[in-house]
Length: 82
Image (cartoon, rainbow, N blue to C red; front, side, top):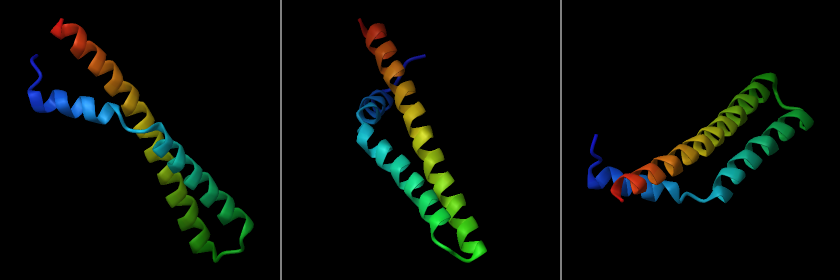
């Protein structure tokens, strides 16, 4: 299977996503969870906050895994070109 130039450029670009951004997502999710525990919200607001914070943490975990997959794909692509 041959990668197009667009796919190769996309893998190179997405590989360079900053790790700090992923850590900010995780910190925002954890801070939101802590906020929902310590501040007395309405039950529905508390459930919504917990759900949204879990969603943010899930997105950051997906980004971390996909970043590793992209690094492996780029390494394989570079090996294949040699």
